[in-house]
Image (cartoon, rainbow, N blue to C red; front, top):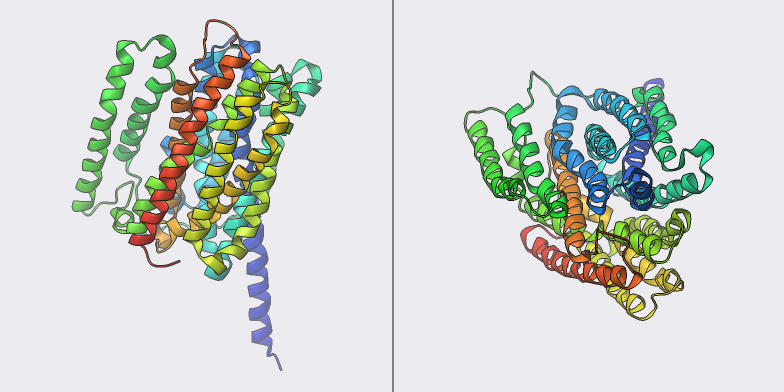
Length: 481
């Protein structure tokens, strides 16, 4: 017989579970919006280039500046969530993202859009760390892998929906809005987040804690000094300021590391708790994130340039042509939660990397043999294989990286991993752009675009092979999983 107090306890637990699930779904909606805004630009980039009269370097910067601003402030966003509560950060981040999205939609020239995209990225950095941190802290260990797998599926859905939104908006062109509509669609999503924000836990750190302002400044300066020259200076003939900024980036990184150690020695709390670096698996995961996502993220911008610039495909059909990648990733991400208990997280990740490598390498054949309107058809199989690999990597790799991380550091850890992921993606766009190296003085031929993409794919294959070596290294520095 169940007593009244026991029944009340069960009711409270059921309510807690319902509220936790609702909170997780809400923060995943925020993650969807943030990630869709990256993939949206991959398809809309060529259309924006024509409409605003931008050059290729400016289009690359419209994409990279979002990632740069996002990456620069992710750790800060994570720490602010730890200190002031995840609910407050969701509200502030959503309001800022809403305003930045509207500003992007009304931009009149490339410079304005670049600035407002940077504001979008900074706003996203306040939102994104709250997603993984909420899962890490609120979801019981037994259900965490399922939640992370669901997050992986949501991420892949965003890669499907983002390009489709861009393609439909540009083809539909209501009121002549064209690509501007892709930014206005964020408005209703932001309103849902604001109306339902009370579902997010309002947990905050005990005691009085302050953010490491000097650490924030040094992180931002380091990333700007590294990525801005590679993105902007390259398209302007490498002026002196580009080389100066590049030379300053390792010095700024060293200054950041020194400042963090000094704060820790004084008993103060640095931006990145040094306890994170004492976990060998986390250190290895950071490098793995940088390498893997450096190869994984950069492909779609340049593939869109080949299809639209070389074959004359519309933005809509360009977005449709890449959906097999996201469908494969979404399916395998859901399956990964069943595979991990059978073969372990590391072997699942290694299997996924092998699929990514095989799929990317197999893209070289159709590019070499079929530079015609049939190219997108021949690419469907390789795209599906690569997508399956991506879905097998995301959730198990995140689970491996966060294993053993204390709840008090969940925000900083998830923020750092997301930072490294975005930095890797931004650097990958730049490196692949260097290899792509088509003429910016006029329209490039299909042959030139195809050759550039093939060189970029070789870079991706090399990145995936290095990631496979690193995951095997991770197996030696962590416990079996």
